Amino acid sequence: MAIKEENQTLATITLQNYFRMYEKLAGMTGTAVTEEGEFVEIYGLEVVVIPTNRPIARMDQADLVYVDEDNKFAAVADDIEERHRNGQPILIGTVSIEKSERLANTLKRRGIPFEVLNAKQHEREAHIIAQAGRPGAITVATNMAGRGVDIKLGGNAEEMAKQELRKRGIEHDDPSYESELEKQTADFEAETEPDRQRVLDAGGLYVLGTERHESRRIDNQLRGRSGRQGDPGESRFYLSLQDDLMRRFANERVASIMDRLKIPPDVPIEAKMVSKSIERAQTQVESQNFEIRKNVLKYDEVMNTQREIIYRWRNQILHGDHTEELLGEWRDEVIEDIVREMTAGVDPHDWDWDDLQVRIQAIYPTTLKKDSFDDPDDLVAEEVVDAYIVDAADAYAKREEELTPAVMRSLERTIVLSVIDNKWREHLGEMDYLRGGIGLRAMGQRDPLVEYQREGFGFFEDLVDTTKSDSIRYMFHAQVSQQPAEPKPTNVTTTSGKGDGTTRRQVQRDGDKVGRNAPCPCGSGKKYKRCHGAPGSEPLPA
Image 1 (cartoon, one colour):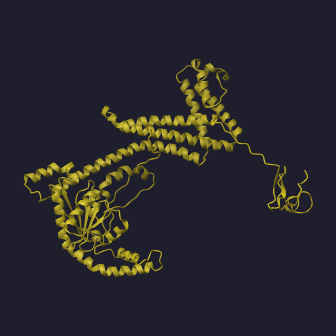
Image 2: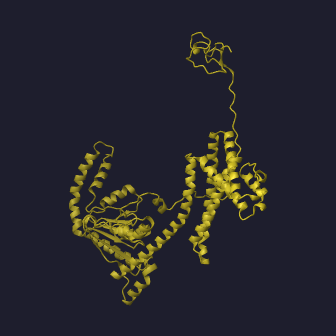
Image 3: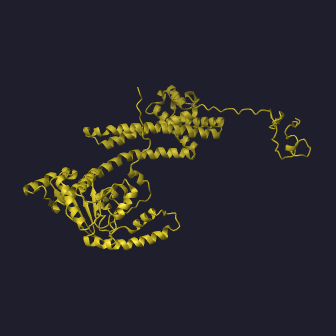
């Protein structure tokens, strides 16, 4: 029977906490105002709306709502076909690849040419975007793929020039690239300028959304592809009562209106009231998603506080920053905790000295016992703590003297890192298990987050205590074996290397080593390498 493979995540952090690690945060986007509350509450960032460089000339039309998707997509295709005949470029945004493919099939059946932007074919998509502002161009994209796309009316002359240079085999590292790029760009600008005027006369870029996204920010990003830098443009969303957002929030209300007015299935509702209702639904979804993210952040903040303590210890050990001082603090804390636990609320006459001795001995080899104190029946806990702390410090210093400071520092590093890592892995598993079922506490009218914080704190206290006690215990009881150095041979006979079978004798002197170019110790006045250090020579006299 095969053993089930398992894995464990040893390090994790939410994006919110990751960004909060930076001392300063700033950003710029055209759609942040819809998440203003989240930026303020989580990051303390103020959102400032900066006016556009030029007044926006884009017309944002009211949503058109149909009874079902079939009638909606038929109306979308009709709208695309008509605007294509008029030479107006169109960018179509869908909420999913599935809806994108459905629309693409509809356009194919009608013989309407189009391009698909799906963030999969990067090199080809640069060409698609460059041509998306040409007269009559139709680009079908998901809302994700449509983000950040800068469509220039009439065509992107610079991008078209780059493509032409690639066709001619002129790359960025070519000395003539910049001059050729400038020349080709000027040529394409002359070509695209008449097309730009045709597009302006047709009304600019038309952005068509086949469905509302649950986030207003994504809808605004799609709209923002049109009407850039004061250019004219237009946007409109086509909806149906079968769309996800409509089914969740506005289906019954809008359906009742359409039923009362006896509206045919192929006739849409166009009303500001409906658009406002949909925006309110989007606001509800955004609030729900924010609460979910905020809740995840609160759970992660529990782990983040613990993570900071553990990794501060690890960094201190890894960098060698006064490791012995850290362990000294831990040693004192461990001893104090044992003594106070054994003596708390107990009269000195009734202290269990034998049990205390056993528990202390488990940490370090002490010789202190009840008879070591002058008047043990009149002691206070502080006196016993101080005596054991001094005794433990002396034992630690003695062990360091035996092992040498260098070996002791290496031992500290090895033991503490091993203990911390093992305990932290166990702790992460316990916290994951706790979080998996903590939501059930709500059935008992208890706040799951508060319960998670409380029990997580208890787990972490145990982690800290056992890390300190195990580290100190291993430092005193770990067996350190040092391999003795192998003795060097005194006389070694080797072949001369001349291939004649002769041998030479290498001599290992007991005294200081003689350099090859140093005067020979025999007093001949020759260099050692030409006297007694020469191959085949007699060894120096003892």
